[in-house]
Each structure stands twice: as C-alpha cells, then as structure tokens.
Image 1 (cartoon, one colour):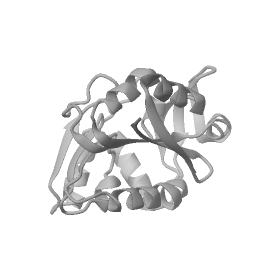
Image 2 (image 1 turned 135 degrees about the vertical axis):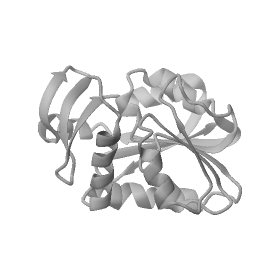
Image 3 (image 1 turned 90 degrees about the horizontal axis):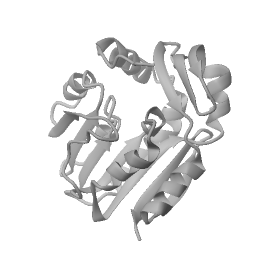
Image 4 (image 1 turned 60 degrees about the vertical axis):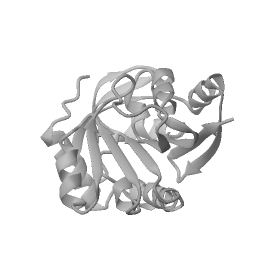
Length: 219
C-alpha cells in the first residue's frame, strides 16, 4: 500500500491529536515523554525521528537543541505555528536510509510509533543507533505484542492486504477519523534480537496496555 503523506493525511492526524480522544497516547505516552525530556541535562541534543505533530517539542527545555524528522513534511507548518518561540530544526526523512542528521551527535534519539511502519527493522534500528553519542541513549517506542489482536479485530474499517506479519487498509482513529495505514507486526523478540546482535543493552518497559519502550544504551 502506498500511503500519501500529504496535507490531507497530516490534517487528519492533527485533528485526532487535538480531539484528546486518543486516550492511549494522552494517558500513557505523553506523561512518559514529559518525564524523559525534563530529566535531560541542559543543552542536550535531541533527535526525534517521526516527530509527527510535535509531542516531544511540548516538553523541551529552552536550552535543548532539537531536530525533528518526518516523512510527512506537512506537519512542520503546524509545529512552527504552535511553537513559535522555540528554535527547532525540522527536516524531511524516513527510515532506514534517509535520516539526514549528524552521526553520533545526539544525547537522545527518539523513535516513537514509527517502526511498525517500516519493513526492515534491523536496518532501521541500526540507523537510529548510529546517531547517538557514545554516552547517549536511544528510545524506541512501539506497539507491544498484545496490540496485534486489537489491530486485526477492531482497528481497521477495511483491509486492503493482510498477511502473517502485515496489514494495511483504512484505520478508524480514536477520534472517529479514518486514515490510510499499514502495520508491520515486529515482535518484541525481534527488537531484542537486533539490539543484542548490535551489542547494545536496554531497559524494557511497558507503557499502558498496548505500548512497549526500549531505552537503549551502549554497553
């Protein structure tokens, strides 16, 4: 399925966000990120891959340096209008091959709710880790294994294609808005195998009923 990451697409996601009906994100993800960002030292450099409508930007300290990357560049005008007084760098990019940011330049690299949209998990995680300082951290957030049943049974209004590890079609967002989507069902064990193979340690946490996060650092 070829999703059109255009103005129509971004407007739907922004309206869903502003509705505050996306309870899982509001109740679980936003508090998690707020605590994560506020605990960072002053002058930390942050790379947000898949920045979307700018959730992370909400929590930045004035001294933080921020680079946001997204395949849907129409999000950028919304972020700039909402956070007029913040100095931000926003760039087009997509995993795994088009992350236009300094290598090993960031104290924190965040990739939230993006990796389920990419086929090559191994290469994508490797690309994210390459942007982290030796003393830094990469945070990967995505659906946990139990979320798969929810997607297959209730999230999709119509299905274009479905296989053992993939599903695409029209999703009904918590606000009731419908949007094209595709999901690759990467298992938790898949994440862990990649991180182990690449030689990284991690702290694994479950956030609410459908999310899992890996806070990854160098051994």
